[in-house]
View 1 (cartoon, helix red, strand yellow):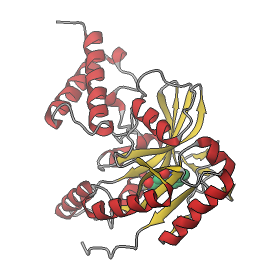
View 2 (cartoon, protein in one colour):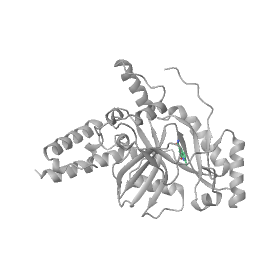
View 3 (cartoon, protein in one colour):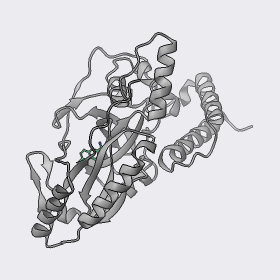
View 4 (cartoon, helix red, strand yellow):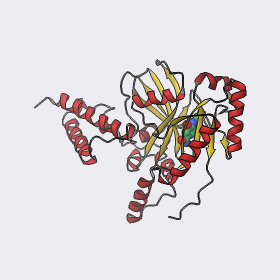
Length: 321
Ligand SMILES: Cc1ccc2cc(C(N)=O)cc(O)c2n1
């Protein structure tokens, strides 16, 4: 048999690879039962050999010190809001404005579903997850690091050659099936049920005790960057999303590129048809001009970028649970 140090390193690698396969590649390598067995073996080994435990071990996701309140976090790069569009005409206007200012009348966009969850910012330093915060007012949010550590879709350390600083913005959400299962459990145990998945995600991240958050089935998709140091960014947003996947961050599998107003409206229809079958709630789709040089040419109005827009679906009547 091999020494405990080698065995813990091996178990950590297997567990992190299983998380990457499950959350990023959407292609699980081992069944949950095997995953749980590996985690239990690692927990036992670390209990026997405390000198081997480390904060980025998969066993260290659930802290046990509830905080009295959340510290404030100032976002070095403001978290942006999105202007909304509700009609095809507004999308034609959006693309026409871009054509006028960039000279590109069939520009390439990155398109993705707009998840109905909670916007958060993750900070990684030399590949280690060091801080997570809510969006707040876009300039200042709440430090919810301990709660975000319990979200298995959020890697505690990045894969491959990590930049010295990488801030990632994304949406924490509660998958529909997990929302139903949670309410089933809550009804059976006389706990309060959640009104909808968005409230489920927001409420779970606002828990002062991370052990409560750890019991909530949350997931995460990355969608943009904050502060970045020590990595050469590719020229387009879609290539940046591919880079985030390589770092081990989940990105929606529905993300694609589309050209011109026609391509955007086709995507809107395509996702609109799938909406009820998606495993998470969405309230629209988001289009972003793909090339960073064209984004810079367009700039911002107040805090909303002029190079992006959220195209919303009509509100769905809430199914009475
Ligand atoms: C810039 C920005 C701001 C909010 C966003 C929100 C979502 C979302 N809720 O999925 C996706 C995005 O790409 C976003 N992008």
